[in-house]
Image (cartoon, rainbow, N blue to C red):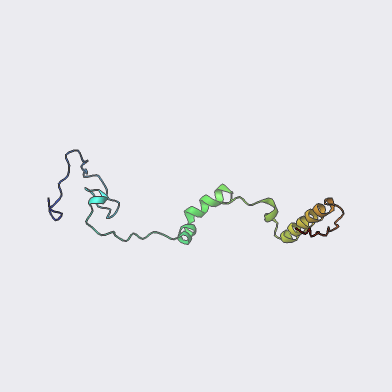
Length: 112
């Protein structure tokens, strides 16, 4: 059979009904792999436009919850970085004291 000859559908292949919607051209009556049409441009609203929609804003405000859970330490704006730095400094000083009074040991070279 020639590769340019029209291909025949096998007998057991499913047939598209009139309600079948193509995902490529959004037409009816055929599957996506059978589509010969071009993909149409579908305009969708941006995230900013969605959030500016009053219906969406009322839903977000009614729930009262933020979309992302924020830890308690970041809810207070003043001094967050200072508190984190102080906690790290205390942790470092506690670790160095427990290692033997903070004395450094000299390494010894052993000849082979």
